[in-house]
Every structure is written in structure tokens, then in C-alpha cells.
Image 1 (tube, helix red, strand yellow):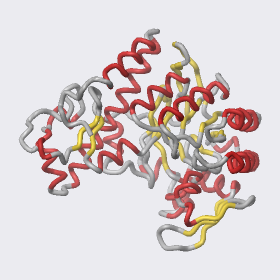
Image 2: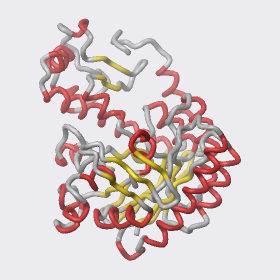
Image 3: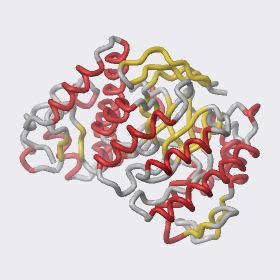
Length: 377
């Protein structure tokens, strides 16, 4: 079982530790996404060098390939992927949204058509728990429905009620002695009364942790930030609070300011594979395919100390992407994850030292200045 230790607060921001069967995780924490048992373009060794303390796996994709029973028979997901630190598996609930043309939702669960071969699949709260417990992550997520945030109110009401019923079934199918800790997920879109209702229902299940789902799925960033700021205090103060699938560096600072402890998002790795770097200074993004970089000998981010920025130039990274060399994806991914993880470390330090408000103010002031590199996108 996981155990959360709240160490310090500064404003609403929280500094804590999440104790798991595979080590202690310092919070706030960003979890790189290893969808199919690997963070794309990186080795486990790279993630250890980056000091990633917790990574995420995707239940839907691992169910399809290589299959949860095979992973279980080979010693569980940690052993299978050779990752010694903490792991979290989602429930496949996001695929209820992202594969909307391939699925049908009922009270029993979700019926899919596999995006690989079209075969019929069925996810129920009970089958998802069976799959996640076989994978053996430290934290497992309840099956939920994640509707687009701008769906009409009636749909959100129906959806969150179903999510609550599914969460109860997940709790009943989960085994507390399994070594995996079950987190429930609060839904309700941008409707404050529905978020409050969902939080009351889900938090009544007495689980080891809770998440906010259904953000960054169609709404404007300001609406998301306001929604998270309203919803975060609805979750128990003595348990970990997880904001699922969010987001940009700016989003992370806003959410930590609201009181969130845990994050995951594919953005830094996906953008890296598409030649987009996140920078710590200025407007914060660099398109490595930009022709102006062809002779630029400077590091990608002159304020960064990652392996990529210590050893390679903008011109070289541009060359790799223009030449379609896979090394480009690796170097860009190393940089983007370093940037995200360094930001989390800086935020933890600011909270510990009771200078959170000054940190937050300085961060956003820097984002409003012109990009010094002249290559922001």
C-alpha cells in the first residue's frame, strides 16, 4: 500500500512524500508516460539518470500487447520492463474518450474495437482490476468515463454517476493485500456542483488516493486552471491528489498552486518526437526544424544543464530531425523530461523554503518576456 506524508505547505501548494513498495516519491511529482512499458525513445537507464521517481503505464495498450497474463507470468510490470522505482497504471478510461468511434458504453462497462486488429474487447470494472493487479503497479486507477469537458450538463451528470458506480465495483474487486493501491477518479466537467458531488461520492469509498480526471479535454486553459483550483480542495488533505493528463509547464505551476501533488502527460515526450523543445526561459518553446537554426552553434537551451544541452548544438539537433535520424527524438526527449523534472524539483524547493508565491510570480513573469532565442513557436 502507498502512504502519503504531507511535509509542508506554502499557500495552497504542498510538499510531500509518497511512500510506495518500490521507493519513496518526492511530491509534487511529474510521471513520464511509458504507454506500452517504455517511455518512447528512452531506456530505463536514461530515466534513472534523469532521476524520474515514478512512471506511468497504459492498461489498454498493455492489455493488447503483450497481454497482462504474460506480464504477470514474467514477474509483473516492474520486472518485465526492468524499472526498479514506483509505477502507476491508468485504467484505460481515457481510451473511452480517445477511441470514441470504436467503443460503446453501457452500465456493465465499455466495448471496444481494437485499434490494432479490430477484434472486440470488453472492459468492465472487474476486468480492469484483474488486468491492473496482474501488471502489479504500485498505484492502479479505477475505471472511469472521461467525457469531453464541453459536453452538455446532462451527459456529465449521467457520466459521473456511472463513474461512481464503476468505482464501487473497482473497490470491491481490488485486493488491498495485493501490494497495489487503488485511486478513485473525480469527474464532473467544468460544473462546480457536479465536481463537488463527484468528489463526495468517490471520496466516500475510503481509498488510498484520489485523482481529478476530465481536464485538458477540450476546454480553454484558463477554464481548466479555475476548475482545478476549485476541485483540488475537495480531495482529502491527508492523501495524494493526482491531476491526470496535464500538461504544459504553465499548467503544472498553476496546478501545484491549487494543491495538486501528482501529474502525468505525454506532452513532453510527444512534442520531443515532433522536434519541439520546452525551454525554461522566455516564451518557452523551440521548433528544431526552424531553418534559422541551421548554423546555430548555441545549446538548445542556454539555461539548461541536461545531457543534450551540455553536448549538442541547435544546428546538430535540427540536422537530426531534417535527416529523420532517431537520435534526434532521444536527445529532444531527454531535454524535455529534464526540463519538466527540474521544474518539479524547483517547485518542491520553493515550497519547502516558504517562497512559493515569489517563485510562482517570477515564473509567469519570465513567460511573458520575449523569447531570447527568437525561435519560440
